[in-house]
Length: 418
Image (cartoon, rainbow, N blue to C red):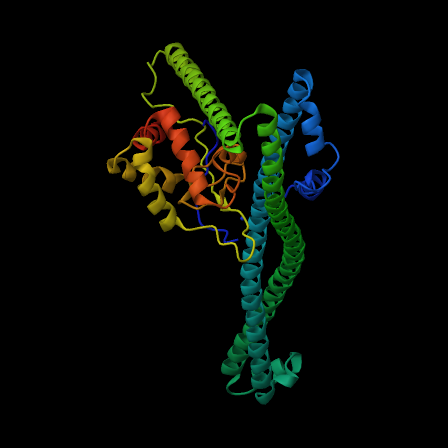
């Protein structure tokens, strides 16, 4: 897929759509059981039996159930995409909070040093005042100066007075400057703390929203499984087939749609590369230089991935487990183990094999960095947190577009995307 891609950085250890909760509320549908009255808009078994009485009614009911099944799938995909977008929003807020916290720490250290300098100047000034008092400095001024001149050691005493006066003047100036610096730093520190508190509230709200969106998806998937079972059974009854046949048919349709999407993306990418090459050639010809000999690098924009927030108790990341699973599945796609190192390098660069790696700019998600994230759903409804599902989709994408992991890695090296 041609897209902006983030180099992975495991920086945010826990990575908001404002409408996520409203969306999840509007999509939730009560579970369908065989002996329950269906929710509004869903057919009952009596409706199915009645539709069998004539071909037109049966065809209409098949279309209705197929549309409902597609709608359930779309709802789950929308919630999954919302969860990923929510996580990306949280990641941006968390980065801002971390930067603000670091600024507070720096300003606090600087303020402490400035206040320590002020205290030191005060001590030195106090010590100088005490020494001056002991030496008769309380009477410094014209009279002391005249007395000093009339004494036999007048030159020595005047020199001491000059040195004391200069030191006192310097201490005062330095102390005044240090106090000004300390005051300015204290003001900056207070402002930074206030901004940190604001950003902390923003990050907390977006984390809550991200986790709520993820829970909404989990709930939707659980309900969808029950609804799918009943609707698929009704569809099989209408068509005179079996649930297994209908499941296989829908899976085949999903795989076909994914393949067609991959081919279309491949066609668009090839057209874009050709357009870029033509533009580069035209520019080189206009400049009379023959070009600079560099290959197209796609967008050239390489930001940083973040991690989707993980619901407590739901640890989704296992890079070692994901790699072990992928190694065991190469043969199923007709690839040998010689392809594994290419795959490791490819997905290390894309996601470090983190199931919840999220690109907060483009929205690409997961081990294979699917864009849209819901493309994973063609391999399973648990794609948000299951590395096996993501790997199966990623393998299909690589096979259909590049033929093999090494083919995909070669394209990545040449173009900085795959």
